[in-house]
Image (cartoon, rainbow, N blue to C red; front, side, top):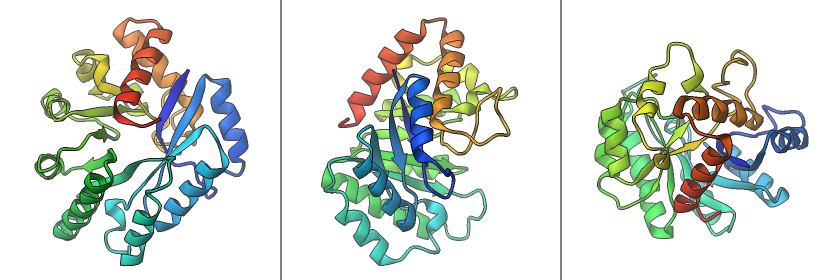
Length: 249
């Protein structure tokens, strides 16, 4: 059985969450880690983890919310970290894709949430887009563990994160025809990766173009098991052991 370690199962994306969960179970995915990215989605994550036994949560303020979040959102974030099913702070990080003009504000928000993770002894789930150098420099100031979500960088970057104690979150991008990620993963021990969908985004082949869902972990798992020439059950064993090293799940 597999775990989708990063999804966004919100009502705005899925009309029937029960159906999404059942589809996942039918495809050997027995646990989900639902990730928030702003106050609204964090509230929904708390709702889903309280309702569904097999859903755990990560809550945080995404860098794309840098210009819109309010201080009350950070207060609400901290107030919910006592929920035993909140197992990480995330999705947090840096994103310079759309603008670099608010870099300092992004860093300030990122730093604040890393301090919260330190205070509450929680792992972090890191979003880093076109901001690798700054992400590494900031993370290096902390003694935290966690996941580099949607990793698609070079082997050199992968090894830096691994040396820092982070796992690499691998999703449908690895199945894309022109993705260079498969060449990186060939050279990395499976003890350094976990599987994620980033649903409803980044749908793997052969379903690319359709809305993603946690059930598609099985397609990612099949691709990686073929790439690394191991049995699917062995991949499940290794990745589940990796998850337990990072998360209290």
